[in-house]
Structure formats: structure tokens, C-alpha cells
Length: 140
Image (cartoon, rainbow, N blue to C red; front, top):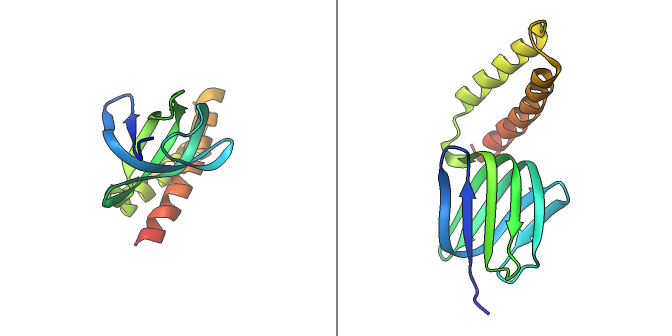
């Protein structure tokens, strides 16, 4: 059995990761925190908000992903992650994340012109931004 698997991570805009040398993937799904290694059982999971840690030979890269799905193939040799947003932790700027959170909070307070779906979306986005800011603060 190979000691690596193929990982693809996509957002609606672009492909973030497409590599064959991944040794492990740590991620949180609605089913709980997990670590995927070569030969993992086939599965599908949903992701709301998670730190995603990709380990390969000689490198470990941390990302933050939001709203998506995780698929592990029957062979355990291919993992696909499709998410709405994926950012490398080192690329997140505290100031811009804080400004976005402030904007969300203003919109939620004003709320009069928003429908129920928009309000729920902003509430979820606020939760994700608070978690994202906490992770950025941990890395500084």
C-alpha cells in the first residue's frame, strides 16, 4: 500500500490544492475531528468551519475552510474537498478579518432589509469569522 494519497481542494473560484504526495489530512466535519491517511475507509462528510492541516513529505500547511463537503474514495487513495472558502492561515490578515466581522455585526443589527435566509447566512458567517479570528490570534 502506498504511503501517500491524492488530495484535491476546490472552491467555486479555483483549485487550491492538487497533489499526489499527501501523507495525512486533519479536518473537522460535522461527525467530529478526523485524520485521514492513505487507505482510509470511503466516506463523505460535511464541513461547516474547520482548520485543515495538510501533511506531506517535508511540509505541513494549515488552512481554514468553510462550508463544504469531503469525499474519500473507495480505494482510500483519493480525497476531494469542495468548500465555499479556503485560505492558508498565514495569509489571513487580522485587520481585514476584524473589519469584515464588524461589517457583519452592523448588517445583523440593521437587519430590517434582510430576508430570513440572509439573516441566517450572516449569523453563520459571524460564527465563522469569530473562530477565524481566534485561530489567527493563536498563530501570531
